[in-house]
Length: 252
Image 1 (spheres, rainbow, N blue to C red):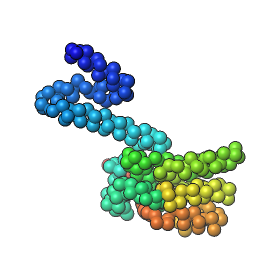
Image 2 (image 1 turned 90 degrees about the horizontal axis):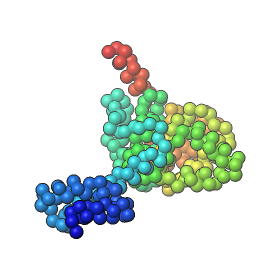
Image 3 (image 1 turned 90 degrees about the vertical axis):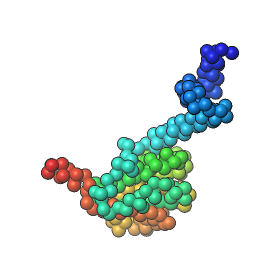
Image 4 (image 1 turned 135 degrees about the horizontal axis):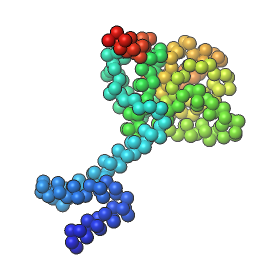
């Protein structure tokens, strides 16, 4: 078989076997293997590992996209110097996603502009990149979806869908008061996930003020219990990073 025919056969086989990375990089890798005088085994290993690495990268990208984050936020972009309330070592430990593996909850509590949503999205992204199924939603959007599902007689299916993901990220919990029905439905989602799959929430209200969001004291206590038992609680403080940054820019 000529070199041209061999390359054509490799191209055809890669298409049939769905190996796009090997198909795209074969010629370059052959040239590199010749320069480095790789053995047949080493060359084959390089080809296969290239395909495996690219597939892992593509799966990671798909998981992050499927999570539904409203914007990209990375832990590497977080300014820890601007928020002395946070211990970088603690946050980087959370970025390993062992708490997701163990089904533990995470609560990010602090005033607006202190980095709660940034951390929620960044840690959720880290979990998705680590191979976990992640879903992001606003608290009000989740409750509205549950109410509509209940009205359309598909509540069990909707709760089960939220129960299947490894990490459910709920942002802006506490910004709006929930009626008894909405709070009950949210409680059902949290109960479905209790001690099996992780929930991470970001709230601008301390736990003592959650009675403004969940007006039934017993239900409020039960929800707090679900979100804090064996969980991680991070307080981001009260000094707004956005406000401080804006003032610094004006001063500059």
